[in-house]
Image (cartoon, rainbow, N blue to C red; front, top):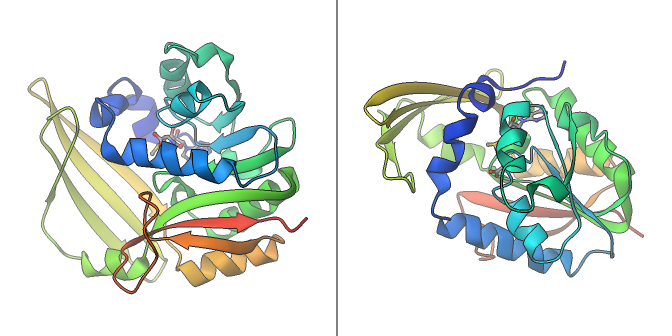
Length: 247
Ligand SMILES: C[S@@+](CC[C@H](N)C(=O)[O-])C[C@H]1O[C@@H](n2cnc3c(N)ncnc32)[C@H](O)[C@@H]1O
């Protein structure tokens, strides 16, 4: 392929505006991944869809040996221009192939990026390839929306989205249950200029994710209700799932 989403090509130079200064979610994501790494076998970490290094660079600054994969050179160029950005080994390609040298203590994919693999086949393939790249006892971490929450938003008007930059951003989500897909259309006003971004996803229930992971030989070790590390409960609308390759 490799699929480089349009937004990652056209808007790479503005991606960080949404998260600068670092949002509470960014800090919480880094913190929980750092804590999870302490429970994983010693070894490097691999981020799938590493983007501009929003999460990888702070983790590297904490002393982790970070590696990454991304299809969008424009996003990786942003990462390279930042402090520490030249020290991360990055493969350009489709992250579902997990084509990167080495074996890892932890592989992770965040910010809803796993669902950017828009077919069940690609998601199964990604989990299988990740399992093959984990050290025994290694962990695979992903975050995702719950389908019930996405469905509840179906048909809603444009929702305001909080961007750290203060730029006015609205989002419309459209859900397509027949194909288990959804799209998020963002309208961003930046310096008086209006930009439109569409991101396409394939959603899966937590149970389907567990099943696809099991097919790859991974078992669910822990599920949180968000990056704060809160418990996953009936009122959670998001989850962070930790899968383990049995030793
Ligand atoms: C929403 S951004 C997240 C970036 C970073 N992980 C973060 O949390 O800030 C998703 C990233 O995944 C990349 N991406 C999406 N689908 C991909 C694929 N199939 N293969 C490789 N990269 C992909 C995009 O280019 C983009 O950089």
